[in-house]
Image (cartoon, rainbow, N blue to C red):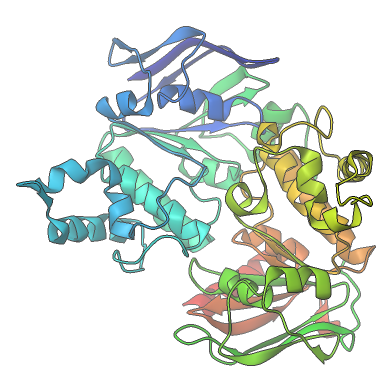
Length: 504
């Protein structure tokens, strides 16, 4: 039994947890849910030894633990798979999986790399990570890195396994595989603490659910009999209406971006598609299917070997992200906002205005602070970014507000084409609803042309007019949604079945 007893934790100006007590039973999956800022991350970091509580105790099998670091937690076989990506980019998949266990493979001052790679491959196979364990991690997707972190935790033979948003970038098929693995661990007596904003998954896998709100434990209940609506009401104190968006009228002849026969050696072969003005075009597929990689080609982050990209019918020469932004008004909102989308240590105003600094300089070349602040305030108001002021550090914002800042910097640059990659990773139910409506408004009212890359099938079904399905770096099908080509509006079940057929 793992118990947290009357845990309280305060940060400057914020009480993150207030007198929280929860019992976690062995052989059970215990879900922690709540909005961003509810205290979930603080609690699991205390259990994982990253934070120390101001008061209260952590008790494992009747023994009070004194955890001063994550290393102390590992000694007691408590392993935390963090939402933040924690890999060494220049090391291989195998080295990252076995990172904290290299001493097991030492022999006469040398590491037995053959045995290490063999063992790493076994754990990679457990999480359905299909890439070679000898490949370096630097260029892998966020989803691949997440699977590596999960494989690392499994290799530690944890007694307590804490999973913080483990399926945030995974498709339903990949998530199902992971949930099956967690059930197997549960049957082996492992305590699994599962943190997720995906309430359907929580109800599918959890034995027990604890809800936090504003640092206070609202309640702990058996998952059996709980409904999604009841959990949401406990989380935010109100009901959330279902996302219902009217179909977007699009002129099929008003093509803003066209890809013609894009090829990249070893990956893409003759990829072609069009994006129209005011359209939301979905990219869907499993981890490593080519969705994000194609986006990187479009913005100049990666090179194609042959093929063409046309913007407004004219060939585009995009060699860098600067070309994409300044010449063609195309922006990319990264799936990895913490590493690539934002400068976490910088202020809100710096992050929003960075794409237009060249327009904010005075005669001496210095950025005008008043202009930068004014731009930030405008977007904080327009996008409902909750913060003290524009000078607040982005690192102190919730996931939903960080994502709004990431979107704001491209809107500040007046991008007409937006590639939005996994827009609601790690954001709570309220922020997710807001971001969905924001994406729809950008297309419907401002005429933005949007490529939406998402592993969240309900999300992409609700928003995208057309969905391109990717498998093995190829587009294997196009699904017309929301009345495209005068067809009737299709339901989620119908679309999900067609996608499943295309992916098998």
